[in-house]
Image (cartoon, rainbow, N blue to C red):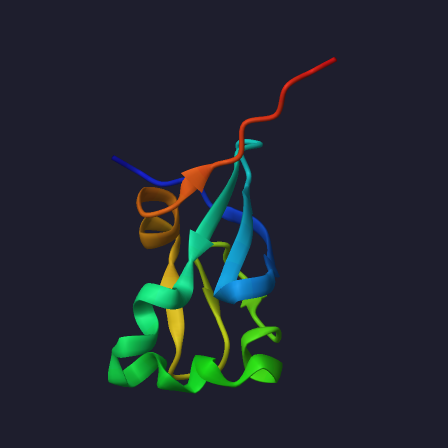
Length: 86
């Protein structure tokens, strides 16, 4: 399955990310699971965590040159926000 490109990302409380994809879907990704891995220890720093950016091509997000996540990871391991219309 091909994951859609990322349109935007926003850091939320409790090490979660709000990810908006180009197909209009919005999902929440929980980064807490990553904090046990050596390469993601740096994300325990709140200021750095909040500095997350979408890569210029939309195929991932990154915090710095060494810490990033792919669009596939974010698409497949997050949950969709379901909005109800009134």
